[in-house]
Length: 312
Ligand code: RIB
Ligand code: CA
Image 1 (tube, rainbow, N blue to C red):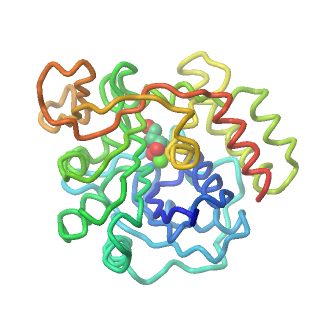
Image 2 (tube, rainbow, N blue to C red):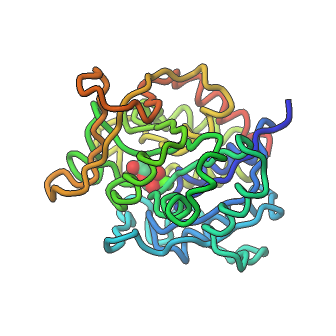
Image 3 (tube, rainbow, N blue to C red):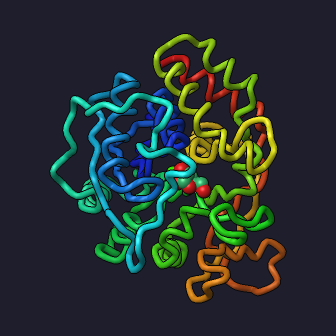
């Protein structure tokens, strides 16, 4: 079976770094490029961080493209309180040897979809959906060519994390999220309902560190910074490792379960801006526009993650 072609759209972020490492370590996947978006930290940092992670993984061959530096209509909201000033606190920052590509991320995604057969390319969205929505708005003809959009975002039974009702990626650019969920593209959604079940417990981080290779050691240091905020907030052993669930879905979907549901995005109310309203019990009759994942075998997830990062 040839590897699955993916583009990773991301706002690194330590958990984004974990997702990128898992993808680069997995022979089932062919990372065509990494596109950066403003989110956890401003674009200049998310783009630099994406290059850093690829280099740490020994994959300086992977092209990194800078995309949107702000949401479609709103001021950028960032999350340094979670990820630190650099967005990757826990690792010493450096300028990647490979410079950013001159092409804009949105143009790269459009060109890649145009050049590949329909159903060939999967988009993995790990941050605010500004780049993906801009692709859809600027080149609607490429939407039917998208094999799947697998995105980390939203929350329903679990509520929100940046507000009581909204998850960060959706909250930062709710208008972009609405465009994506209404695009007709096949969507798989990894909300907080599932990502809050994959916690970076002490034993798991130590297992990762015991791999002994540089990517594992760097990842363990980043997680020890990243998890402190959520451990304090939720009173748990470890914090949720959100973004790699997107990549794990592509490698071993059997570790997850969920159902097709209608998902709508709140863009009008100040109180609930960015909420993902999931019709889990099918009471509205609205079209089922996403496969919403709710559960995961967390041990199977971390066995995969730790094993693969140890191979880099
Ligand atoms: O709410 C969690 C999401 O927001 C993750 O993707 C994290 O990296 C941040 O982007
Ligand atoms: Ca992210």
